[in-house]
Image (cartoon, rainbow, N blue to C red; front, side, top):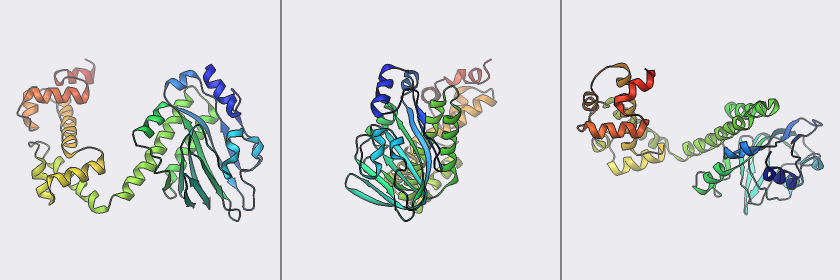
Length: 316
């Protein structure tokens, strides 16, 4: 473990070796060490666990068994890390930056570093919480670029077995602590981030918009061997080209043109792999009048020139 990592752990009250809390109640908890090698990955898992808080129980239970920085969760605290907290049973409250949310089964809370917050179960109901803490430059960049946001820290994701499965995969990696377990745990964290963002996107987009994006994809696939003509596709759907561009980009993260290019290059890679035909012929088949432009696009998207693709795939 690097000196900086060790110092940060000790300042937060966690030993450099990390530790698990005793299972005096229905729970799995672990505070994790991480090395300079882990930090070079740009992401580290700092803590993870699940705890079932029974009704009429003080929260957090056995407060003094937690590092000092984590103890004041029910009164208000500021953490030096990110956390995601998923509630599967019971009810409670979550507060962050002056906003308050009612927590119920299926709620996901996103705690951001440096932001004061609190959460706790109702005394009458208790709750069952799953959580994971994480940090690193990769997650900081997600926040800086608006992929994660201070304005969006509470998600009504609902109860989903795939979300629980991801948490349990993270727990399994932490229990076993096999080589590169930190990397594997962080892969699970990225899966959780993608789950909440995908859910939020689906919720914010009316079914009508999804149908438009799906129709556009259909016509692109159907006309994969034709010229790229977004206006013709928008006419078939019944919206303007600018409106299609706006809806499609919101739904998929790319413009119709970018998506059309993507599926054409993917189709070209299959043709080049399976058939021994000239590059110019492949380009013309897929609607590219300029084979040199096609070759530049292909290399830009795949990293390999079309003339070398078959050898690259089969390593001949």
